[in-house]
Length: 241
Image 1: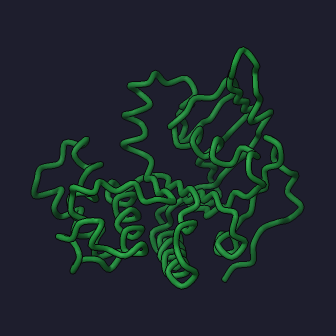
Image 2: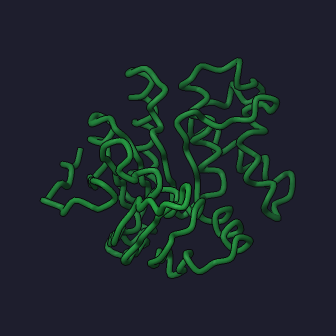
Image 3: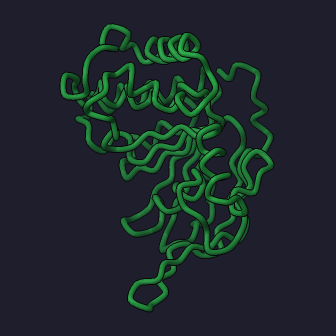
């Protein structure tokens, strides 16, 4: 259950009239149109939709990786759509943990060093960084693999390293883009168990893009995108486990 430090009735994310388009060869291609969305603190949301529906674009906008064409994205009271590139980079480092389909680990770094990377942007001392990394490794049950390189780890272990890296800064928000897409079903289940634990025990706000209904069923709310627009919610909340 939630640890009580998060008010789950409070909107952490408020998105209003969000639009995103790209220009290719002089042609404007709309990807998201007029998106309105609220996400409460401590929610675990699955974002689904067909290929090309704008799922990853929306996730990248929420995570501050990309900037909208127009509209507002307010997260924790900050409209990140108005931040400069430098301000956005600082905001991401302080507030967002990223989990990707293909792990995005540095092959020349050990599991410990990969997890430590986001902390190098902070003012923590080496001893404090070590303490944070060891806590994150313990959370994903990989303490015995901390000195292994990515090519010495299984896919599931690499994804757990990636989850530990996402957690190590204690972010406000965790964004996951197809986090089980490269894993077999058993390993995917273990990773999803861990994400459920982060939500239930640590009260983390998680937004997960997935095409897998079994992965989506682990979330507490399901949001569908179709052709750049949110499909009206027909009570698609997922039953609590």
